[in-house]
Image (cartoon, rainbow, N blue to C red; front, side, top):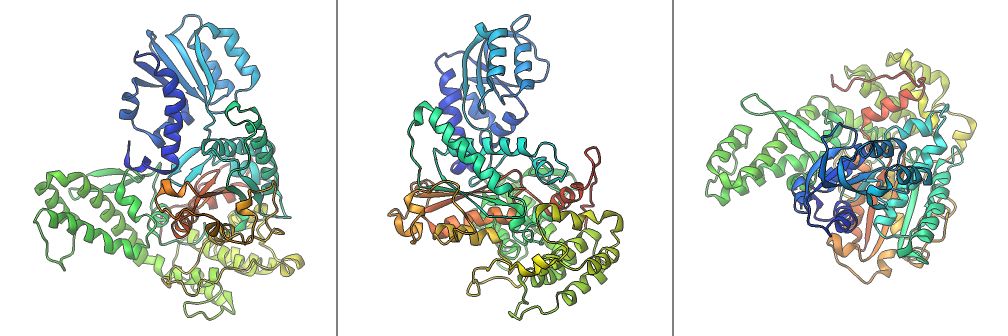
Length: 595
């Protein structure tokens, strides 16, 4: 298996696929064809490689919707979502003449009776196996999952949405398959939000569907609650974190550089374009992704020198490692070519990020941090946030960065006056694109202050004054406070009602860690303790993903898994917010380049 799938969600999902799909088909030694739809292609790509499938007697992987040559002597495995489109495509493979000797059908989730009956009626004699395996989520990382549904943002938050309830139902089904895959029956809690109540609605759906799932599942009948807790939060819990310029490696890369499908494009020394995949197969990426950029720039040259030293090719200790020097190393050390290639990628990426940082991000970060934290680097309270914002507005930053700063200013005040808001919109020159700011109201985030917003208090934050931080990285995502409070059983029941009763480990006054005897720190050891699953409705930022790993590492006996409808970048979120005010056929793309 690939390095990145050695532990965590990816390993669990691949094992589940092997125990169900592969095991059912392994009884015959015949080589088989695997036929996938768009979602299952992404699912399998996230947790295994073609070589893994080959070792399981799967010789060809095909697209369900493409025209395929019949192979009547081979058996076909269909792994697909239970939709009418997939079922129709499947039926077409066996009518009027079968393309394959037999079909082994596996659905990601519950198949509606009408679709099952349609399959049975049209090509029942060709189906050898038909099962639902309950995996309709994507394992993005060891401790991160998504519903692979960025469109859910519009469906949920658009005030004119026609499919909000249907979308929440679908998300609930996906969360249930996550719990089933982890073999967890968690207690469910949600963040109480009087404004919209989508978190409460989703919590009710998940809780009911979990109960139904374990009632119907023959292997889990009468299954009691497991030592796990599921918290459902809305994006409005923390509008700051996905808007700030974050300076840890992964978050910074996805914010400042255009990275599509986790693919980073860069130029080699000879000027040719190259691509690198930023995922858990890259060991160096896993080591560096949550580090501050200052630490990353120190670590990469050191790691390169370590490789060089092991081949008795020592460079001068104070010599600067460049891409050119790495090229020479590759020629001299064939055995280390792959490792050095990884380091070339990350040296290029780190250099590119530092170039952005020195050009404009560093100055922006000081103002952003002061606005977000409400105090300067010396701990002095920011008395007049407008004085902090003005230098950003008067400087030659691009419009997107000015919008981000204005939003942080508004968030810091819990809303501003209509008069002040209009002046800010005019200053940034977005009179015709004011939805970037105004549409946050659809998430329940105060933009224009009212008597109720003056009375509503901001949630108190954990005291982190003892923690060492960089002056340009003082903000801590709100979700980290929530994770730590949950693990220590400190969540206020008034703010975090129980949708269903949690296991005893989560109901006492002592921390979960105090209740767990096991103190192991490896991912497999961690799973012998409790699990905290957090689902963020409306997208999760890379900085919030990082918090799941940090809290897990610090706690040792409670593994934190975080999930969402999709993963956000600041530009993605601003575009989605803006489009909430658009009619269904209208779209708008904001600039991603930096001035």
